[in-house]
Image (cartoon, rainbow, N blue to C red; front, side, top):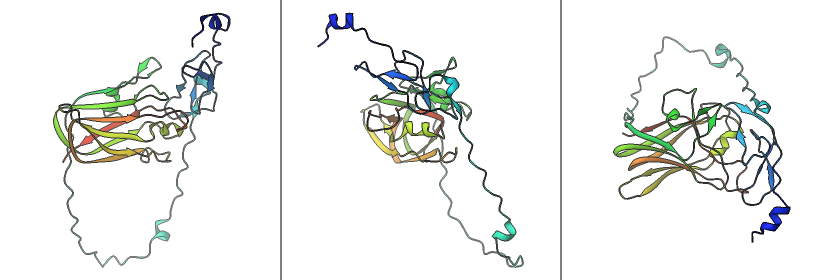
Amino acid sequence: HFNPLYHQFHPTVPCEAGSYKIDGSGECEQCAENTYSDAGADFCNACPYGHVSDVGSTSEDDCRFASEPEEPAEVNESEEHAEVNESEEPAEVNEPEEPEMSEPEISSVRQSTTLTWGGTPQSAELAIDGDMETASHTNCAWNTDIWYKISFDNVQCFDEVEFVNSYINYNAFRMQDLGVYVKNSDDGEENLCEVVRIREDDTVEGQTYMVSCDGKCGDSIMLRVRHDRGKYSYMACIHIDEIKVYYA
């Protein structure tokens, strides 16, 4: 029970820099890797895109560039391939034509919260602007339902959803077990396409995900993620460089 006399003579002590206050408990916990906080913070801020930091970092200055992946060694094509008789032309193979996919016109995009970084809101629209140098970004949190929604004027039957994770380091795992759903606002029905498992791959290509919706129909696409404390290593949030939706 709440005791006002106890709190009068035992005031809550603010958390030191590099930690944050756990909701309801009054206890402090160190910020995880790739995040930081000032003194008295209630949550930890994520390092900028492409940056990493140690556990318990106290300012953005502690965020440093992630190491770049090593360039693959050059291969001498003359050694890699056997000699080919150029006079022999390969037989023609008729490849089956894949059906063309179109992108339906988006009516609106929204997200549960919006992170402001360097005075600039990382809004939902930045994930559909065609610019890989910008990204949408929600706030990160434990034990919270976090979502990103794409709405359309009419019901569509969707084939695939493609998105690029904004991070190629440990921060990518803040989207672990992201669910991609097709929703119909008329009846409220929501059907799961897939649950996304984040890959340990520090390339943009490796952090590009193609999710099959197998013709499920609705007027919106929902991305949802939730990380309960103790089950996951990182708080949950949604950060997307670009997202595209396709129908046949």
